[in-house]
Image (tube, rainbow, N blue to C red):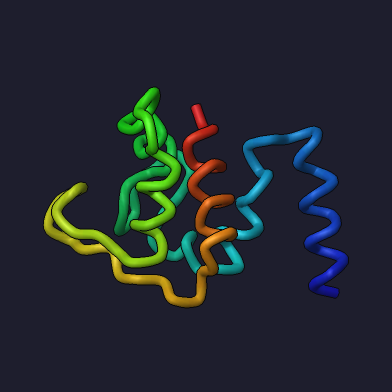
Length: 101
């Protein structure tokens, strides 16, 4: 079943790039604190994309924040480390977030 959902999500990425890695974000529990277009515990992904738009190295910086956590960037609530996210997954998630408009 999980393989079928992943295959479906990958096939939808051609037709709907905004959902290209939302399945990965959901599976890694990112969507518990973040949403694409509204602030929850953390900032909306579209706000993150806007803040880092055009910055060199933004994807690598975000990937590191995803894995190791961060604090003070978006206010007093820290983002915890996510050891369940592998480096290649973090990069994929960061690229996806930065692609949102």
